[in-house]
Image (tube, rainbow, N blue to C red; front, side, top):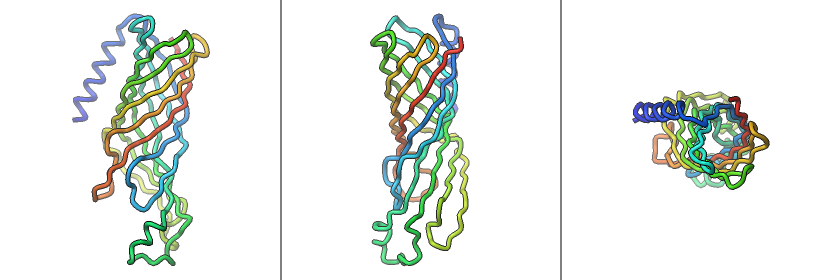
Length: 216
């Protein structure tokens, strides 16, 4: 499943590399990410992180631009123990729980947004399209023990390039001929659950604020 998708994306890029009116550059900025769905006894909150990578722009018409990107994107969430749900289990002793338990769950992706920019004015455009993501690794960093006497250990998983996909929408503002600001939102449609053995469904939810610079 993953190899045909990578081949298709590569072919897609190579076709555009020879197109006229093409520009290439770099992009980077901040992610404000969370997950949607069931994550058990953990309440999730937004995590501030970053993304960085390369971009291209290919003019399709005067008002329409195709803008693919390849970026390293650190996502995930900050989790906090929901003791009210956990204590509903009669086998849990409340005395051993650490109510200050927090964990930073980091999902690091190689992300490929494929966006169309609709130019409303010379400066402002609306952006939309699809995004593919390949999970590089997952890192869980506890800030305090789940149980009061438990040790704090960082846990790392190999991402195995697990595929994530979804929809991305946003807007761009050109500061000048080479520099632009981009605000976007990515809503994942695939289930990102990996390590939990029972049926839980979770989706990525990421806000982006980026600065792009066209080199040539």
